[in-house]
Length: 286
Ligand SMILES: [Zn+2]
View (cartoon, rainbow, N blue to C red):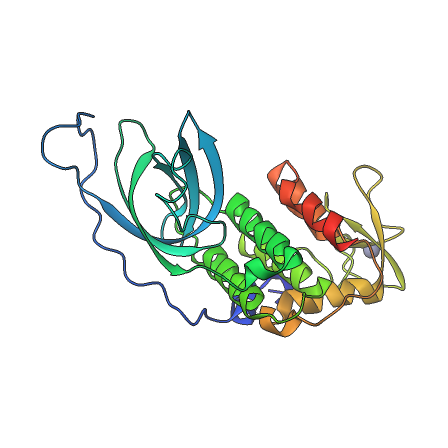
């Protein structure tokens, strides 16, 4: 196995979040609870997760999306969250919390209680950090599966948010690139950045990045169809270094000149859609 294909290298590079998630309570039996408001209380479920998105629902409710280590992406219904903003204080984006919910009448579980573990106060002091945190939440959330363990994407997001929360200055662009490259690696589509993905040859001074074929190519090897971006060998090497470095070491690092969106293009190619928070981030940083 070529080292660039070794996802464990990128895992090790992320490091372990200092706050390990606490053990989950045993899952209560699920199934049809009848959907009635009366009768014995339905069993609740507890999870540790990071709020990755919110969406208005009906007149007064909100659907909250959470990334969890053991069940990937989970959505819960916060009843009354729009009507009474104070009722579910703590549901802000990027917050890490212990969330208790109970099965609802539909697939959607109903939020019962939220206990904030880390409100990420530091992130909210800067528009740039908040925008990057929002992008990290959308990126890891979009790549995560629903109902499947996603410990590596969860660990990556938690580390990115810890780094941003503790930052005293706005981060350089290598942190964003490292986040993207690691996330792609964790879902099994690591971009090849240290050789030509077509012929395997060493990089030359001027290269192409083609997300359709999975990374860097010589200009002569570049596919004739699909998106091609021109990158220098130095830029590709900096992206690869960001992929392997611990996120906390990337806070002050700036990439050499190059197209800032090649890794987001690879994400979009994998998902079949672009991430909306990326446009906000680009607007703030340029
Ligand atoms: Zn080649």
